[in-house]
Image 1 (cartoon, rainbow, N blue to C red):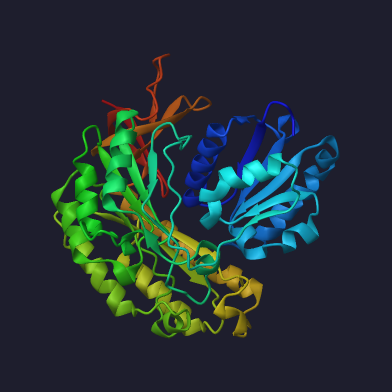
Image 2: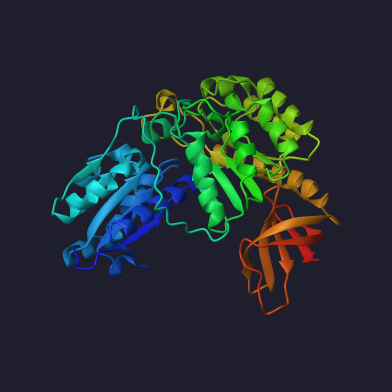
Length: 439
């Protein structure tokens, strides 16, 4: 290792991974490391990985291969996150120049692992099994987002959906105390963050270990923290989505009027094969709660097409559900087999070309739904939180409380700061964004 301890960290994947990286960076800095901008500058090169999608692990090994020559210059490599937990010590076999492999459940041991790395050890592993009760909390979190503060309130997953690798890479569900979450919310608000987003693989499965607050009560408590203007959360699971969550959003305007509620399929038969443990009717009942709210709450979802055994009729049922719910946003994916999951034993007989066709049909239909939904905002005045700017178009970019992107013109040479709020009148709409003029 160089006399000055430097590191480079690249993150793959979701918001959970991005926030994990903030905590890893904070821990490294606390241990005397300085973050640099490239692999070439770093003494320690880390990749925080995701294994949700197909070929995720191959992307990591390709990146390692691209820079393996740096090992000869004395660089050390570490693989963190889901691919690390999934592949384990096989990473050392495929990439022998890697010195550290750690799953996310072992990040709390990072100071110890870094010390071993600095003493010259070459094969250090942090691979907790899924039974760990501990979460990764650190006051040294190095927040990278200039306008939104993330707080992980629950880690892991106990749902074991047939297609999903998360329970095997993230471990079982384990929640933080609501007091510790509120303490972090106050700390973030004191740093100037006005928007807080609560994170979890199944965020609404949260169970306070001390039994003080339900998930809905925690939402309301965070909204009351001085300085907090918006509270978001994701991702919710339909099995644990309760009516009091909708009642909380209805009662407290600082809770954003947006719910992400993945359905995955509109077919009861496919949902059963997926081990989702709810039916379309169960799901639609929760949608009815949201639609009955006094506030208009935006709904987004995830849908998988081409799951093993999905028939044309099953896909039609998904399209029927799409038409009934009228989502504001859909994240659609083709099914891909993931290691260790029960779906690996199912016959995946649907050709990739047919999966692609179904996905395109889904996305084309959803685009028309969104075109109609977004057009209803024409002429409205929305509060927009600034996220950045697009110099090429002379526009400021931001987001409404409903999580809809809003772009608006800006001629003043002094740009509004990320995290500031402006009133914007919507003058044009697109299927994926709104266009406005600041008031």
